[in-house]
Amino acid sequence: MSCQPNSRKLVYNWLTSKQSCLLCDERADGPQALCIPCERELPWLSAACRICALPLSDANLLCGECLKQAPSFSRVETPWRYAFPLDSLITRFKHQARWPLGRLLGELLARHLRHAYLEGLPRPELLLPVPLARRRQRQRGFNQAALLARWVATPLRLPVQEHWLLRPRETDAQQTLDARARRRNLRHAFELASRADVRGRHLALVDDVLTTGATCEALARLLVTAGAARVDVYCLARTPKPDSIESSVPTAAGPANAYTPSPFRPTAI
Image 1 (tube, one colour):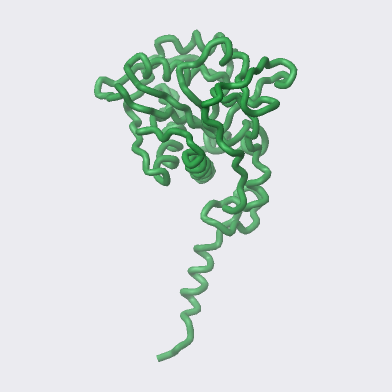
Image 2: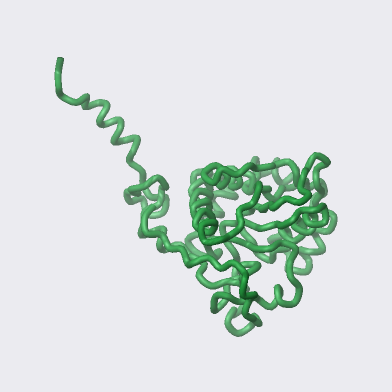
């Protein structure tokens, strides 16, 4: 009986365990397919509105829109600004069906949320992906928010309800509309399934990118009206205002008892 190791098995194990970074193609030594230098280059959101996560010039502030009228959701939790190279990763996942990219981002979002829970962010009872209209889902072949919700829920051990929120009415694509038109476009666009049990529950909506917040506002208002105790929003990225944030967005200090997570930066994958 030979005491030499099985060379074929060793080569197989090496090949199957080796993982390349999805951004730079260098070796990624960790469970996610992203090397540490590339993860550090992602557009991490350091200072943002305490409610809607709009990028601001300083932390612990509220943006002008949230000061003027508080949204129906309690908080947006997101790790990144919508900027390069994250925007290209999301686009490839969403419009080119590059699911490995979406899964990577979903797992990193889950890690960010785990850190936020440890810092005091209330943990929801379940996740609700933002629904797509049927025609758009048939064209794309999948709902990116539903996939993200599954990938976030698994490591966090949270349940997901993919069919509680319905979008029976076809609407124009939100990307082509300004903020006011987006709100008008979404009137009566969503419904709650008859079996949805939301009364008294803490829920979290899941989506890929928050731009004006019109979609999540419409859904959160629907859930709160139906009796939900709290609605948060989890997304991969938040878009900044197109103009200068520092000069154009009025801000004010948020309430002293509001949750503010410590800045999270990766040290290892």
